[in-house]
Image (tube, rainbow, N blue to C red; front, side, top):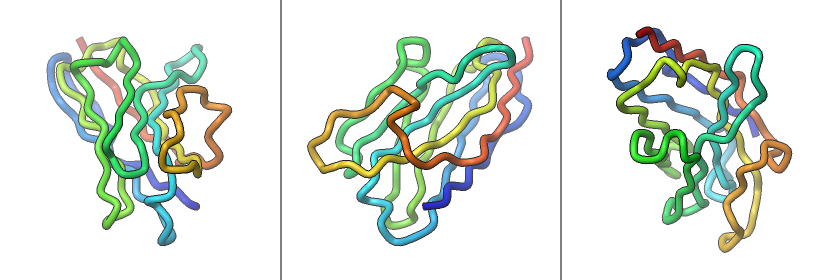
Amino acid sequence: VQLQASGGGLVQAGESLTLSCESSGRTFSQYVMGWFRQAPGKEREFVAAMSRSGDRALYADSVKGRFTISRDNFKSTVYLQMNSLKPEDTAVYYCAAVRLIMTANLKTDASEYDYWGQGTLVTVSS
């Protein structure tokens, strides 16, 4: 599985941005998808995750109510809609995938994901 993230950029505080992550192959629906981020000098942290069918989502407290994860299994793409962006959201954002059974719990630990995209930089100015 190869993941290609895109959509990062420079925005002002309060603005919105949508990240995309496209997967290669034809088994996208078998993977739980996650978004993580890493700010300069900090460890990679969980942002959001979505179940294989898209019926369940999990968010970090810091983004709950502002970010929305979604997926289109026909397009093999997962999205991260980010609203009301804050300077503290500035980071490199990574998409990740792990192959799990349909009923598996969503994963928040980066070590549990097997495949990673290259990252896309989001910079939020104040």
